Length: 287
Image (cartoon, rainbow, N blue to C red; front, top):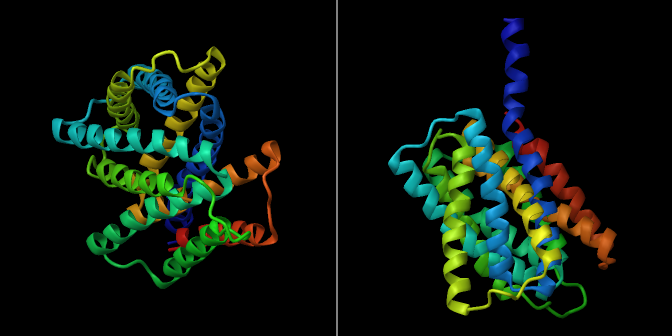
């Protein structure tokens, strides 16, 4: 009995490890994207982001000879990519127009709440320990989000729209089942590229971007796609609600980077929120 127990413990932590790695990747890419879009068109920048991410993920898929998903799975992932691509552009616009430390958590909370409720209805309620973890995560994100000066920053409405789009992305990707994670990440970028190119063509703003922003966009796309790959693996090796809730803690990274490099105000309540968010991870990962 002892050997089987020793082997099973690490496997229980695998989904949480994937999700935490996605937190780091998505939090970093959101900071980079929000900062870069302060000086360029959000949809044009996101087109570059999608190109960079697609190039990296397609190269990985070809190198690893990963099997291509079925037609049904590919259709769901493309739909998720279209939703996520539009949401990402809106999200970058929200980050650039408001304070990153407030707009990022709002999108994260909405993006996590809808798939979590869906997972509870389809997979059954999680255990009591995980429910406590969900409450810690929600409390932490609320503390990070709350405006303490009595005024709501710009970009709140856009952040809400982005959160709904992210929720659709999570749910669509889940429908792909156990398809290759690298191909899922590639197809989501393809869907995102389709929608952002259409918007850019409609706007006719082809030159509203600098060469520096293009370089940042390619880097952002690679980092963001890595986060998508890690999230897919988290959702495939565990429950959707666990993967979504832990991965939605990425604003903590965005907030810390904004505080470090942009000198955004960081109150004691935001610090408490970060601690609560961190405390939620082992509770959600517990079996």
